[in-house]
Picture (tube, rainbow, N blue to C red):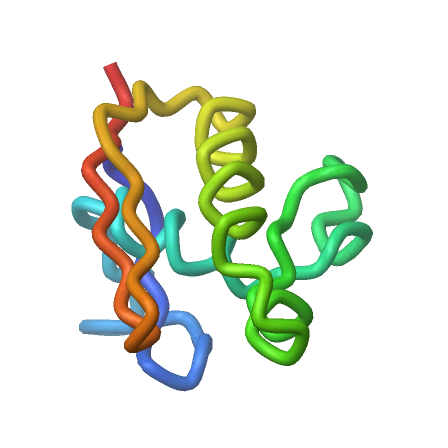
Length: 95
């Protein structure tokens, strides 16, 4: 998906006094993963809330919720893996 891009601090990327646009699928996945429900005002039920899962050590439930949230955003999810070392493997994208 092509959209406005954010930098590592979640500020808008601006080049030549204009918004920087580009492939945003990974960016969107990261935002969905980190956001808590209610933080996307137009979509109050969107967001995984990664911090809550990590603090409770519920990695199996994290995989299920992340898959559900990516599908709600319109992505086709091929695979989501959550490893005990904290790494995630996400293979999903917009059709």
